[in-house]
Structure formats: C-alpha cells, structure tokens
Length: 58
Image (cartoon, rainbow, N blue to C red; front, side, top):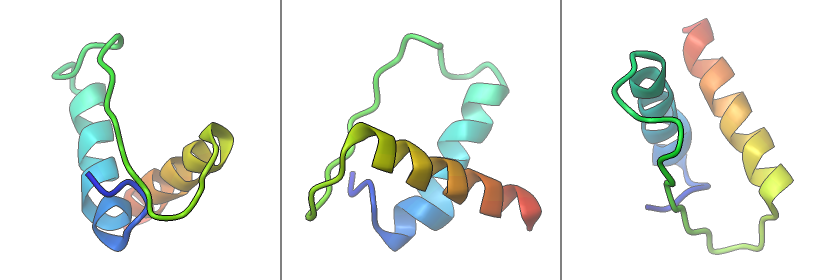
C-alpha cells in the first residue's frame, strides 16, 4: 500500500496498530509499504508514530 499518503496516515496505519494491540496481528508479521519519495526507515517510523498518535487523540 502507499505508505506515506493521506489514507495511510488517517486510516491504514492506525487500523493496523489497533489490530496489533488487540492481538490480531503477530509481532513477527512484516508489512510492506511503498512511497513515491525516498523515505528511510527512521523517517517512516516517525511518520507512522505520528499517524498513530494523531488517531489516538481523536
């Protein structure tokens, strides 16, 4: 999926996180995301963390 777009930020990443917290996704599962622009691992992790935090605040 497009890992750095609006849909990922608002819906996909928070939903995956909720499923993980509920025990519905194993810790060793690998999820692959694609981006149009170059993003390193740390940059994507920061993006995902902010997306999850923003969803939790709502």
